[in-house]
Amino acid sequence: MKKQIHGPSDPSTGKEDQWNGTVQQTVSIVSREPPLVAELVAFDFTVFGAGDYCCPLHIHPYFQLDIVLEGKALLQVEEKVSFVARKGEGLLIPPLLKHGSASRKGFVYGSFKFHLLPRYAPLFGPEPRKVRFNDALLSSLRVPAKLHRAGAPLAGLHAVSVLTQCLIEIQGVEPVTADLPKDLAEFRFHLWPVLERIAQAPYAGWPVRQLAGECHVSHNYFSSLFRRLFRQTPAEYLLQARMREAARELTAGDGATIKAVAAKSGYQTVHSFSRAFKRVFGVSPGNYRDRMH
Image (cartoon, rainbow, N blue to C red; front, side):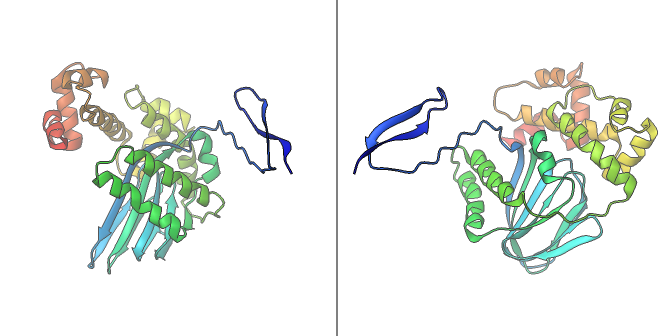
């Protein structure tokens, strides 16, 4: 029997389509939510051979999702959270937590480094999460690396789509406690969104006194806590953020000159810009661009 039924709504008009035909069931989802991932800093797909491997504890201002695809590895966050991750297991590591890894027998490893859109950060919170993924999702983790090696277009977007699926799976997982000292835990809570803004506008003037005020501490105490977290001064961190953006622009392939990038990054002369660039990367801007190309 044929029956007139209502179809999915047209999101541009709010009206329903109509047609004559057999009864069907349709689920129509319209989403105007912005994407979870604001920026994919890097996706690393690495095969480690047998033998001692150790990545010591380090820290950075973005999220990291580490997943073991084959073999096993010791994953660690701060001094008290560690476990042996096997195939399909891993860690979601929020910004500003020290983390590292080690293995003796070799393993295959996928690692996403990324910034979340700030509105979604509360969904994932400031604590690490142990995660486990099924075989289908593990297989999809290998695809972005294959596309990149083949020079396929949109490989980066594919990596972001896989990461987004992983984050959706993770969202309901209970966090584990990193057990930071109270002063560092509170400082990290306030510093995290500040560093997100620095990452979005690294060329902006960021007086350390202003950053301290946004974290509700004095200038001297801010610098002391910052050095405890990063093992560098706030000024050194800001210089590195500025130079990383300059390096990205120099290698973007749009023909930007060193003089133009120097001016955009706030330097009055190419000489002063080149000196600062070399302090961070160890080579001149010209040599850096040549190596990247």
